[in-house]
Length: 383
Ligand SMILES: [Zn+2]
Ligand SMILES: [Zn+2]
Image (cartoon, rainbow, N blue to C red; front, top):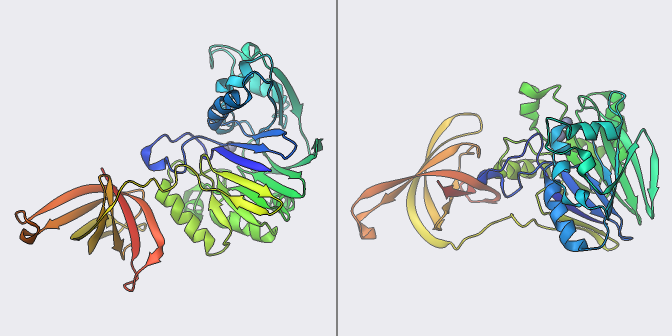
């Protein structure tokens, strides 16, 4: 089984530079089975790029895909009107989800494209479209079986468990913990899975402070589910729009203290569930390196910690590139804030005594690199 992430963001797309390593498109995950069935979990904005990739791959051959929607919130359906293969009469799509408020899957999706929300309605989509209302069904597709579980989310959400050739993938997003029946169901669904893709929208602090009742989970609950259900690999998913790349890095780092086999979903990331084991690939946006030059310059960093406290710290710039630099820091800067980096230029360096102030943004917190002063590595880009 091969899994590819086309959209990993929750709630709304985030096409901003500080999010582009993990990606800004909303939920969409492609799965290919060894017998070449194509499954698509959710149709957020990531679906548009998947469509382009399928058109290129299939050429004149017909595309058959089974599509499973967790629910009908925008971040899970927004890609449908922009999915090119749906406009080709040679293609076949089988949409599955739960009927919403007595409205069928078909009616809920057709309404998305009705006047005045989109210039053409779903009739303009020439592909063969079939719609299936699911309710606790177990389904078979070739060598694959699929079952569902209702999750705890406003207006409902469905989690999916796909088994094929001895491997199990569970996709469970948009789920809030705390409802005992549902907490049990999600653990049942994830039981012994090779890979669990799970809603980790908030930090535990964000959740208790202001996000209770919003229908989402935290990385800590993701870890709890993974441990309770004996999951082998956990993929944190549905990233909050306000969590930039270094912030997600720090969430993964924190989660890995409790559950080592954890990663965060990133756009373009591929997982392979092979007889020899599970291979989790890096994603193309990861570690975008430009050429770095070692330096040794005195530096003062002004910033704000995650607790909101201002700090000033003297350190040394260790390397520099056209775009940014790297230094060690004792303080823990909030990656969502700008920090000011002040370079001290001394006469021995050939110029007049002076200071260069550079507005910067944290792009990576290297928690794995710690020196004898208990400092960790910080990579920044200059603004
Ligand atoms: Zn969502
Ligand atoms: Zn939702």
